[in-house]
Length: 289
Image (cartoon, rainbow, N blue to C red; front, side, top):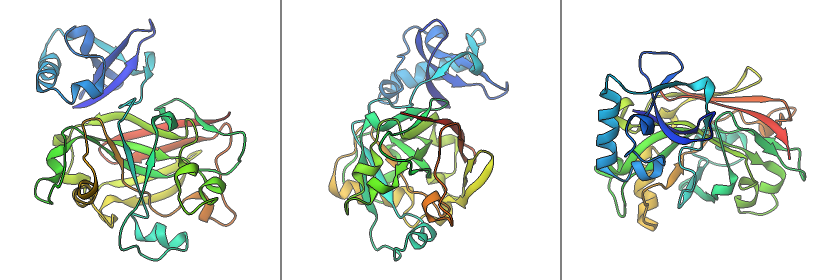
């Protein structure tokens, strides 16, 4: 399933499931079954809700819509935690002057830093050094603590795409990256939550690419992760309990703007696309605060 929250042209909020056979078509799950929640985070925590969605998708009389007539919502609008990995590709660590790390550089994002598919990424008033980062995201569906490589993936409800928009000068004001990663509406997230059954285990071996105004900037593959999804979950749950609706962002490959000569930063009017094979394309236009 490929689930997404949206607001219709009438302002009504709902959840959709992307149609497999029809371009730009989706099943309006809440309109098809009024007992289905209009909140993706609530859905992934309930087997009853997931069963209702399966029935709605199979319903020959399901109510459908067109993607061009909706406004996408952030897949998980208020995550309890957004845990991010830095330096999860050796080539990205190298381009930033960092040695291959022995342990991930974890940092956190807040929900106010998020923005949805086709909504703007906002360049703040205080800086013109807004950079892109193509990343795989995964969403937690079950409470998880002290997991192992054998059972780690059992807690994953789905996968999505993230653009970890970074304000580079603020990121480097301290040894902690948090301040440069939490400006309002800089972290683009979406468009879909894709359930694990539609993807390779742990999303291994998927191409990942960023494009700025159509030009390829990053081009890599998730097989190059230093820490794969299962390993990442093991490391995080050594420390903290992951809860349903938590989001983990898995790091970016080489090719970011600040490491180029000359540097390339996003500016108003630019269009940034992040594409991950078998998951989709996340697209955002840049605007000034």
